[in-house]
Image 1 (cartoon, helix red, strand yellow):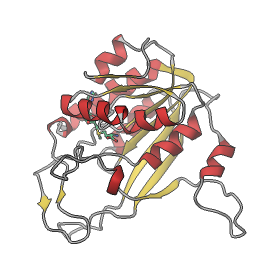
Image 2: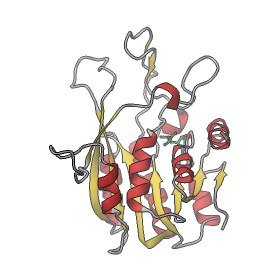
Image 3: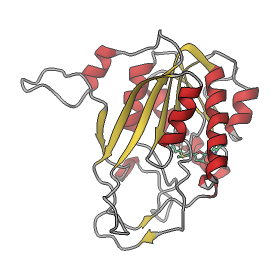
Length: 256
Ligand SMILES: C[S@@+](CC[C@H](N)C(=O)[O-])C[C@H]1O[C@@H](n2cnc3c(N)ncnc32)[C@H](O)[C@@H]1O
């Protein structure tokens, strides 16, 4: 099985044909949330620049199609994970229901639902609901021997006790949406991927639930965040991304 490689293909196909069963230590998956809508946009925002609602063809399914898609990809991830392996799945209020149902049907054990509080979340355009400022990361495991590097997690926790000593990390992570130098942008300054995840999020997940030399797999690699962070911390990695334009961005990001 090849490692440190990005496949430009459908993840279900690659998971079924190129990845050995029971071989992967950690899966991080940031799937389509099925939230794409009408291309709502807000140009000229004084705080964060122009804002566009996610509106991608790979993110539009009917409700039954989305449940079936979720079953298929989580089912194939179950097969390629080691019995001691972990899967972390990013989601929002749009798709947490489907993801949880499928994890439970596959007999995964849910260890945590981490709340990501987006400190620079965009205001709500409709003014008819509370501002959406959170997403979630579900941590689920197959068996009982999962990896949790408790000491390392305490060490990297930016929150400290009142006396300055280390503190256990909570399942509530305050992290801004990716901006500044970390955001991968084109020559026109526009973000090249609509849903790039913060490297700090992947750092916490990878350091918590894998060890040096372990294999980390991301079936929806996007701009390549998981591979970049896995490489940085001495893990082997495998990424899968269906769209050529994002595959190329991830490749370039890794070269740099
Ligand atoms: C939410 S984004 C992931 C973003 C990524 N975490 C990052 O930091 O850039 C989901 C990605 O999955 C890709 N995708 C959608 N369906 C796919 C499939 N069936 N197989 C592989 N990739 C897929 C999309 O093109 C998109 O880039």
